[in-house]
Structures are given as structure tokens and as C-alpha cells.
Length: 310
Image: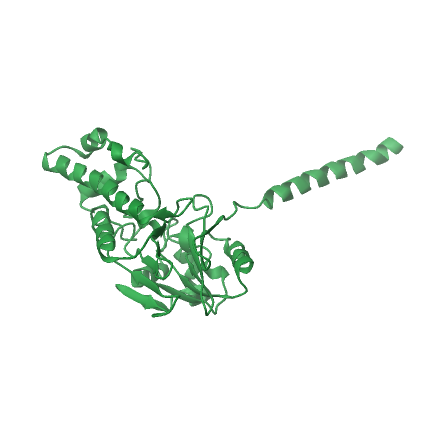
């Protein structure tokens, strides 16, 4: 009789263990954000390869300014890091471009936040014909349209002009998308590039999701940025694990233009895209940059886009 009584209790206990194990797995924390101090008031919230794009966090006089918000679900994590650094609220969010891994948590912030973006970014966020990836305009439909940027600009915008918190926003043309913004923190001599410089590897050109990327314009846009922007020492890239230097951005432009020039020479010689891809050899001076032949961050899509005139 005792055995008959114990059997259902044992099964119940095993069931509870299994349920708890499943619950723990479901509640397993997502990858953590790493904080990199640039100045006392400017930090980079990193782990860009696993949490979404890198964030610039400025503790300004009026409140906290963020550039980008990582993947959906990271709003609470970002706010927790803000609380660890300051008791000031988040008042301004700037998006470097439209992709979900840079604006995924926009709607997880208070409605009082001022959202700022280049006008093409807002247009993409307001689209109703959302692609599954990498645009997340589904997040801004209906009642959530209140999270669409209320402050937009075409080519240049300065926030908090003349003071220690001055931020200069620049748009130089198509590249990764058609809204990529370079954000300069003047006093810190630091610039956030978004995915116009995602790290030491070839870029992803978003030319097939209606987001306006261009392999032909990418290098020209980088060149305009480098020739125009001054007094920057530190670069917060879109996804690299640590901040980089201005010289890394200059080298990155040369790295990309080497592939572009290689492709143009092949086209002028009447060679096929496949032949140009097969013949590409990364110059030794770019040994710290990755140039895979296949995949989204690789030689193949860039060469093919150039051949298509995109």
C-alpha cells in the first residue's frame, strides 16, 4: 500500500523537476552587455556580436543620450546599466540606422524620450510593407507609432550646440543603408559609425530589403565622412567588441576601396563576377581585417552588387 502511495508522489516530483528545469531554461539570461568607459560621461555598451549593435551612452546635463538600443528585449538591461552609471533619466535616443539590432528596444523606453533619426530612417520605420529581417518596422505600427522619431534631419543636425554635450549628426549618402548616420560627441572626440564601420570585416550591404544600401556608394560615403569630420580620436563601431581608433576607420576605407577597385578592374577587362571573386587576394597590409569569400559580410555579395550597378 505504501508503494502504491509513493508511486504517484514520485511521478509528481519528477514532473516538478522537469517543469522547473524547463522553466530555468526558458528564463536563462540572454547574453550580457559589456560596458567600456571612454570618458567619465561617455560609455560604450558593447557585446555587439551577441546583444545587437553597440550603444553610445552619454551622461549629459539634461539627461542620458543613447545611440541605438540593441535587440528587442534589451530595454531593461540598458536601463539597468544607465542606473548604475547615473541617476539621470534617458531623455534622447538617436538611431544610427533602421535595422532591428540597432532599434529593437526603442519601444521599451518611456514615451517621454525624444527620438532622433535621419529622415530616411524614419521613413523606413514607418513602412507598412516590412520585410521579416532586418527591418523591424512592425514595431512602430498602430499605437506604437508614438515611438517614431519626432526629430529628423536631412544632411546635418547639431544637438545641445555650444556646450559640453554637443552632438553632431552627419549623413553623407548611401552605404550600408540609405540612412546611415555618423554621430560625433564633440568634447569626447568620439564618433559612433553605426554599421558604416561595423568592425574589422567587410560590410553587409542591405540592398535587397528596400533599405537603400549601395556597394558602389559605400566607399564614397566613407570618404566624405573622413574628409569632412575632424577632431575625432575614438570610434564606436556598429559591432566590434572594443572601441577603435580614427586610423582604423581610415584603414577600413582603404580596405573596402581595394576590393572595389579590384572589381572595377575586372569589369573593365570583361571578366565575370565569378572570376573577379575567385581572383581576389586580400593585401597583406590589411591582415587584421577579415575578407571571407562567402556569407553576408564577404567578397561575393559586394562584387555582385557592383556588377549589378547597385
